[in-house]
Image (cartoon, rainbow, N blue to C red; front, side):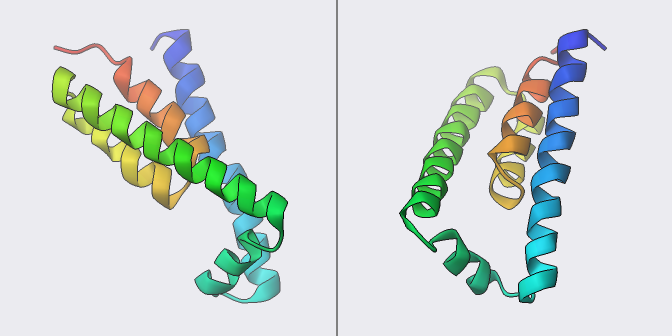
Length: 105
């Protein structure tokens, strides 16, 4: 595996584990409520801005993935879309780059 691909997969794993550890800590402290977490994301203007920044980035990444998958026929790369919205951009983007840089046969 090329060094660049190893970096991408390492970033995808880190981008899945590190943010999730914060989410789990929040759930343990505040209860397992998704609506409660969404309310916490909008606790002030700074957090709302960050949520919207990441949402727009996730949508842009998804549009890019779909456009490239349509062109390159690399259907496996579509898995990066649910990874982006279920885990986060910090996982979805490096996962997509890892899948995009694989040798296409």
